[in-house]
Amino acid sequence: MSGSKSSAPDAHADIPSGAAGDRPLSFTIHSQPQPAELASQADLQRTRAGRLRMLGVVAVCAAPVVASYFSFYVLKLQGRAYSDLITPTVELPATLTLQDLDGKAVSPESLKGQWLLTVVQPSRCDAQCDRLMFAQRQLREMQGKERDKFDKLWLIPDQEPVSAELRALIAQGTPVTALRVPAEQLQAWLKPAAGHQLNEHLFLIDPVGRWMMRSPADLDPGKFKKDLDRLVKANAGWDRPGR
Image (cartoon, rainbow, N blue to C red; front, side):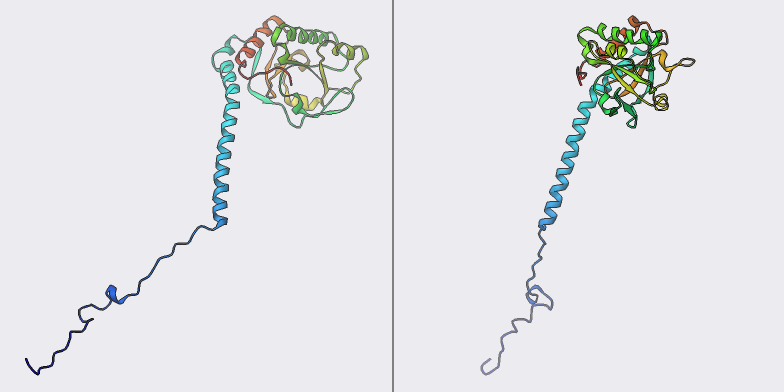
């Protein structure tokens, strides 16, 4: 109506209190990774990758050894063995005290890498010593083209002098590795068959350093060779001549 007062509605009347129009805009800011955190994550990833690669290498290296032992021990080869198979095998003691004939210390680790045809005999070699050391030389030569995978080892459990003649003999051809070792340490590692002595046997140590076979006291080289042939065949995929 004319003369009546009209007023414009309040611009905010219809906007309820607390609606979006009344609230200021806000932003959520997410923190960015710090350089130290990024470096730590990268290190962790590299460590995991390195461990996986290391496990892969170990698996590749161990597979042939595991396969050879599986072939020799599990696939009924033990039923045809002439020698005594040592189960479980016995590790070469890392603390074994070894000296050469000149008194120089020798590390047990240096013995690893080849099959060791091993005899335990005194410094003053008697008739039995002569027989076993002859069989040791014979067995190595009987391996033919595989003979370089075998070393001849003479362990001496005393400190008596070795004669010049015997030194010359063991140096002929492929030398015998002659090492002195305390008798008590030797007896804690290698064991004879029941009722026999260590010096009656020929022991076989594998390239990893495990004692794994023992000849009968009355050694027949021809029969023992058949066991060696099986071992060489089972290990053909990884065994290499020379240390």
